[in-house]
Amino acid sequence: MNASETMRAVRITAHGGPEVLELAEVPVPVPQAGEVLVRVGAVALNNTDLWTREGAYGRPEDPKALSGWRGPVDFPRIQGADVAGRVVVVGADVDVGLVGRRVVVDPAIYDAEGPDANPVGLMGSERDGGYAEYVTAPARRVHDVTESPLTDAQLATLPTAYGTALGMIERGRLRKGETALVSGASGGVGVALTQLARARGARVVAISSGSKIDAVREAGAHEVVDRARDLAPQLRAAAPEGIDVALDVVAGDLVSEGLPLLREGGRWVVAGALGGYGIAFDVRRLYLHNAQVIGSAMHTPTHFDRLMDLARGAEIQPVVAATFPLEQAAQAQEELARRGHVGKIVMRP
Image (cartoon, rainbow, N blue to C red; front, side, top):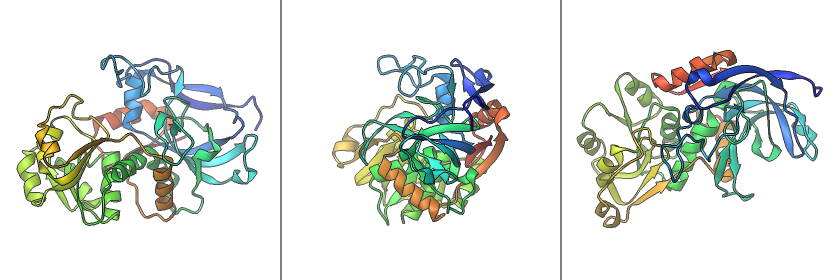
């Protein structure tokens, strides 16, 4: 591959609606020392794509400021955190044996080298991502999944949604035989939480609505309650012994309604704010019952290693809701924003 080659990529040059996504011919990135170049087989969409595009993350000192996940976005930015594909070129100091291998990229940019490092940046946000025909990534962040029976589209659904879900489950210390509450259960993270919690041997009580309830049950939920109706009595009926771990991407009023349903020593893990970020709860429900509220952003390298082991053995079956070509990135994001689907939306460059 020579240095003058170009590729098609979808990038944003400013914050805004779907109209700021532009298809462009850009140079194929050159892998630096310690990096590889991956030909993108599939890239999955996430809520973070919408929020980064909109600048919806706010800043600690100004919650309403236009901002990316970790501060200002360096425009133009190629979006897309979740990539499955093949290694085509390696940079200096990288094993050439990786060339031709099918890989999934861990999109996290970590704050340290160790196995328990925290993610402080994200591919597609703090560095260019996979809404493109090629993307570079650090060699230590590509995981060889050549032997996995899962398709590229299925593998691409894993990094952010399943990584986030596994991070929540690990930080919430969910154990076999416990009861887990999953909010937003039809979304990408929700389906992942349901499948992973079930695989761990937990009893899963999921919150969903209307037409999606059957699909959530199919994903492995033992009980599904309807968020269109009064939740507390439904949850008490579905989990009369109480909830051990809440795996929550909704937050908002659900936290104040749900905390009293936690058992002694229960854990409420929050990894999203689809229902609103300003919440109020009775703090006595926390300290009198040794309960914990835990924030969880994505995953650690250790969590991601575990996830890739599950992918190689096809111990999880990701649900691909729809597939779009790269030039329909705006339509794909609009479809994601409508939340009418179950599972993940994927693009195939």
